[in-house]
Image (cartoon, rainbow, N blue to C red):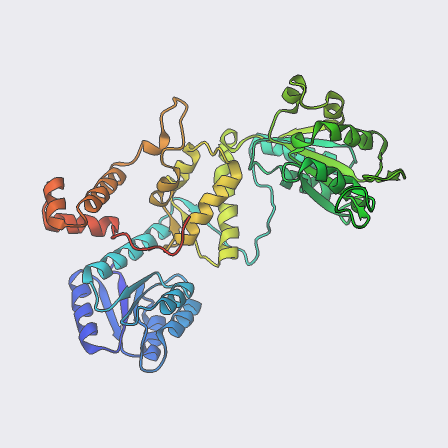
Length: 458
């Protein structure tokens, strides 16, 4: 079935030219000269794509985008305009324009944008891949997983939330140790009391004691008043000691005493204070190894690990990746006002092959970076490859990122040749051994474009 394109522009020559061009390419083309006519024909014909001029006689095109998106959220809109200033570009992108092309029009650039937009929409409609459901709100801090390892963690949270024992959570950076601590606290009878996280590696050792236990006025230079420490402030709540392995050796004895007796003194104080705060500690290092190396007190280690949760790295629970991707994109859509509707099956496969040294945090960062730059409503393999290329390894030790599909290899090679020749088609064709029409076809097929100055740096 033919794709339908609606062109909204008040310039008769442009309408006629574009109608002829896209009709000859096999599209069903509908034209409108005003915003109201364009809105009416959008509702009447339900076009697959709209080419819209910014300046219309009865309404600003940017305002029309807003109305179009309210009625037809999934219809892609390509803006064309002679007013290619920064402010207009920003407004167009914010209101959901797929592409922004200045006049006088480069028909090949417009054609490439149209083909890419329609191709992306076709991929969204395909039945394979991961479909993203977007609720109106998407809570943060949710633990996601159906793997055996995660089910065991969920069970542990259920048990530990019913008592007050000290818990040690061990796992690599980015695995969600703080989320587990929060889950234990907020599912406990003491959920209404404070949950206070402290990153022990981010505070200088001399100040960490004051941060934890407080200090008396005049106890050291700069102590102009008495300060209550986190253990006092927590009351019956939870103190989460992140990176507990970084606590200075001399301070470990004072923490041990608190765990044993629930007693402490402020720095420079003589009065013994009590606190019923629960301690949950986390580390990305092996405390038992640090004990053997004499860098961590053995008695403190045993006190901290009354209950112990070991969080597996993402590479050891890859079956959870599709669930995590679905959850994270749903949240990213809500927070960044995006409308990513699908992740291509091959893109999911790429993510399953990668080892994720940064774990869930790295996965979230990758998806966020893609969402920021994504014009389509589908994440494909081509979006994933540049962010993972050369990083992942399979079981045989080969670099997964370099095992590209044939089309991806061809696209990258053509791009490099074009950059090498400064986009000189004659020289590029000579190196590639193809004709100019073939090169132009490949450029459109792979949506290759000259590098432009990018206002966003990642």
